[in-house]
Length: 163
Length: 276
Image 1 (tube, rainbow over the protein chains, first blue to last red):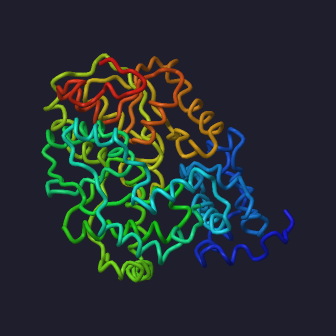
Image 2: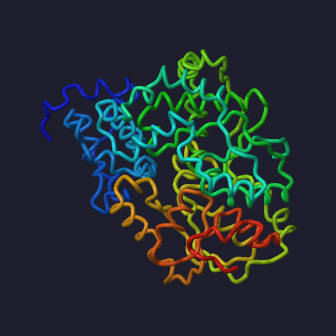
């Protein structure tokens, strides 16, 4: 694959020495690919993503492949060289999300987490069922939300544009 | 585990599947596991979508919950594969002093810091630790009619250098526990499969194709029930599956075998009807 001008020096941006090490260690043997459940149904091509990340040939503002990963960790488990493709995909997604490239589903989820501290909505049915089964009502307190806001302010999820 | 622990039920179970929490608590009570809900908990920054939007956010939010457990001097007990792997891997990353310092700096305005200590445990791990003798002592209604296809799910096993519940190839813990309740195991996964849940809502076509591939062969093997210790897999099988095989979350199978009634543990809330 030829070096692309899309994202020159992509590897330098991906979270420092560890990821560079992951990328350099990859020998393109391709064992990550047949174990990938998404690949078998037309989704992400892990080996190709590893190569593209290495040479900087991914358009992070538009790439869709990286969002077709289920994060099942099969690739990382299978890799005999101890590279961690799922982690590389995670960090590629992080960079993509910072450029506004993320699925609507995750945007909604992030919005919910930032506003409520939970990733699923608490509904009337939630309260009804918890009561039915004698479980204490669920609440993230204001103090906890305040702590969460401190963390979000200092970290990347807090900077993702969710609107 | 003899020491009391903090129960962390996550997001999906407490909001949409509280009946799973009911059966899980029932089983923990029977097995003599002492627990209290983790105070001041939030979502674990689930490791499929959210974590990949902010890796540092994930580290800090999970470190915050680990620090709460550290302060209380208790281990964390998770009912969910996603939460288990999320917290467990975070604790693993935070063994590195530099990472811990970075995260503690992020957490400093909250007045918390994490220095290690609490172990992160999975519900299936606790049951397995209790062992055949202790578990079967409570089995009042052997589930001999069940022919089970076991589906451990990804994040209780992978990455195997972090997760400690079972081996990553041809895992056996879930099958063993199923047999302790009297059920027959008719289908096992050598390379544990993905349920496709991670792409539901993101790319539904691929998610469905993965789900179908995973349950292919369950019926041919004669399975009349799918067993999983993960609420995400549970939801995927229960809501999206078209083959109509009922699914049981691990604590439901145990609770039924311990003599709980279907009403007690809310089996009526299953979308794919289960007739015990």
